[in-house]
Amino acid sequence: MKKHLLFLGAPGAGKGTQAELLSRKNAYLHLSTGELLRKEIEMDTALGRQVKDTMNRGELVSDQLVLKIVRQNLDKDNQGWILDGYPRTLSQANSLNDVLTEINQPLEVVFYLDIPEEVLIKRLLLRGRKDDTEETIRTRVDIYKKTTEPLIQYFKDLSLLEYVDADRDLKTISSDIKQKMA
Ligand code: B4P
Image (cartoon, rainbow, N blue to C red):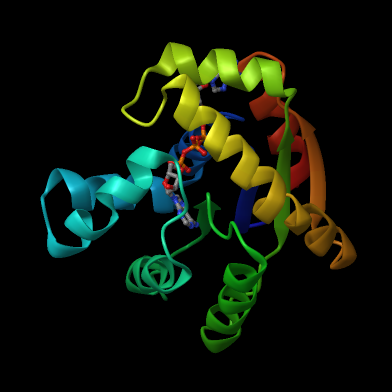
């Protein structure tokens, strides 16, 4: 079974939801950069204060800061991990490649959660997090299209990409993912 996984997709595609389910089932480390950054804000750390406004505007935090967080949290002796929301830029993908080469834990599969734009906007408005206002969601979707979407082709070229239709109920999506992990 594959144990070094990545979830890619637009904001609201359900990356966090599916990664959480899967990591609990398999006792894998769930590394969500969004979640880790929100924790820093909650704890009012120096890093949290640095990223708060950027996140509330729906913009991406700098590649350098996110890389620092990933490095700190990627446990070198874990039994498996799921990256959720990282990488989001080609530069982050290259940095990740360097880190994984260093720790000798190559990525085994990338699940691309595909979802129509109107569905994700509805989902995020319902979720109602601080960065889920209509204006912020539009900014996040625009940034996603410009900077993150090219990663679909990047991982396809590496033969790592698995397409997942994310416009279905949670259970159907998770059993689809489970099958593709075998
Ligand atoms: P994230 O925390 O990664 O948030 P997200 O992309 O909005 O959400 P996700 O796709 O995980 O959706 P979820 O499962 O919650 O990022 C937040 C911010 O952090 C970014 O905007 C950026 O500022 C910063 N950041 C994070 N990573 C970064 C990086 N690498 N570089 C720079 N900045 C970074 O699902 C959404 C909603 O849909 C939930 O309410 C859920 O219950 C619902 N849902 C899920 N699946 C469903 C289904 N199948 N059916 C119906 N509803 C469903």
